[in-house]
Length: 149
Image (tube, rainbow, N blue to C red):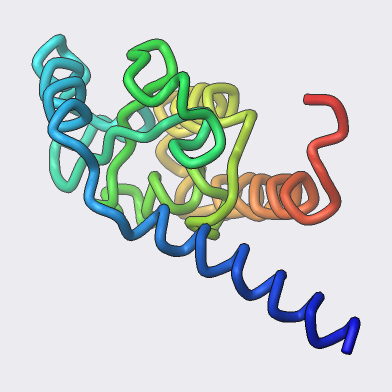
């Protein structure tokens, strides 16, 4: 019986998390997002693409409600795959939309610098290696725990 209750508790938490991600965002968010984009954040911070941009919360919407409308908690990423990968998914979430990447700003800077200095970094695998590193680090952070960050 104890295992049954524990299993249902876990399922309830997972359902709540999924619903919080799927829920419609309030009108206030649309206003803040549009202002942020209009202020010059209308391109991906990694690749510069203006297609399929996402205004990403550095500290997640569901976990940090006090930062939802704080523009200093936002960064623009894209889903355009301009450089062969979905910047929002791969860097913003480490490959899993339920994950938080607390190093997203550092990762954006590193990839932007790497690829802008040498376009061969895309074809020779250096960007792929860094994306694998991001995924592993973000996965560990989210599965093992936040460890004081």
